[in-house]
Image (cartoon, rainbow, N blue to C red; front, side, top):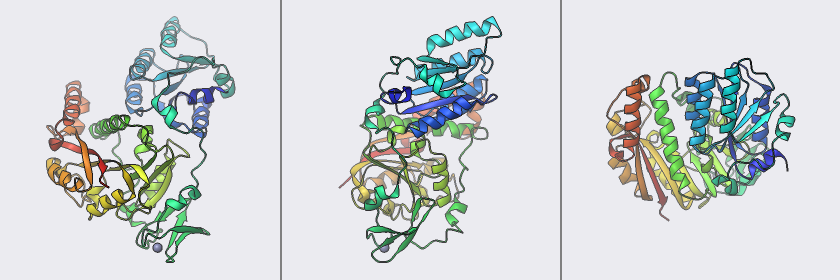
Amino acid sequence: MDAIARLMTRAVSAGVIEPRERPQHFARGLHELLQKRGMAVYFSSVGASHVDLARAVRETPPDTAVIFIQYAPAWFGVLPLIVAVLRWRLAGRWVVLCRTRAPFDRPKQRLAYEVLRRLVGVELVGTESLEEALGSWPPERLPPAHRLAAGWRAERGPAPLAEILDLLRCPRCRAALAMEGPELVCSEGHRHPVVDGIPVLLPERVDLELDRHAAEHPAGDAYDAASHPGWHELGFHKRDLVARLLRRAPVPRASIDVGCGDWGLHHGIAGSIGRDLAVAGDISLDLVRHARGASTAPGRIHYLVFSAEALPFREGVFDLTYCSEVLEHLSRPEEALAEMRRTSDAGRAILTIPNEAVTGKLEKDHVQTFGYEAFQALVRRYLAVRRTLGVYLFVEQDIDALPRTLWGRLRMALYLRAGRFFPARSVNVIVDGRFRS
Ligand SMILES: [Zn+2]
């Protein structure tokens, strides 16, 4: 058994850290190889500074079990890298140091390296050749078994449409669908195109050339770290809270992300990806294409274009339904909830909304202005709610100003954590429950 096959008996998700100033074939080749073998891979190109490495540590998706670092003595600051490795280790990650044969210029580098190699799980030397470096991996040096390793089926190929064809239903009449050339056709004769392998299953006839939904929600417009550091941090905190909720239960059998946007839950949380089936979709082909293009989990996710108000699936398919920051965009959110319940196997649901009764209107295309009470009343008609959590207790309004100072960062950390206990006063509300059958 080769090194990656051995690794995959213990872990299914990895991070690959590449030095930004000196991009190396090794890191890129490793990234490609791990993805091809069916791992979820977080790839990050980072600079040598504390700030950059700290950002990479913060961004690392919660289920990432192993971190590969492409390393040469001159590429990273000595102390920043040691601190980053310590933080990864404290968060339970196992670190693989992939070192070039470059010599040490200074004794300080040599000393730092001796510290570093004692912190990592295994060291691979000679990264000029991927095969050679992986071949030098001692068979007995493996990370402790991660909880996802047993639940995930390893080495899955691409996700062919045929695999889910009998689960699909016509969004206009709910009849079964069959492939007919490049289209999906139902017994009533409703035709739905498949574009670049992505089925477009919308209830109304659409002109894909126009894709008005793409104009309304352009891809890649998510809050970026530089101009919205506070909202960025809030997003990570929300991601980590959802990951913690998911860790309380076994890996789902069949998962759906309703309204994945240009990113999607599976990018951040490998534990959200259904063992046998994983579906992600949104109403805009442009967004779905973007989500597929940026996917960290190749071959596991079926991407579709659909409307939350007319899900193109038969009854009782999913045991995890995730729908984040979508319901406020819909004129009929109760129809979307009814559709999610219909396609769920009385399974789990994790729903999130912006709490605009507290924050005020955040986006002009939010059709609904939910508050905590109104949202609870709505979802309780469909779900038995088990937990409601909040993200960021809304005490200070200028969220992006906080991360700019140390005192601000401390306050931010407090508000983020406090939100959990005061969802009614928080920026985001997360509801975790089970659909009523
Ligand atoms: Zn039909």
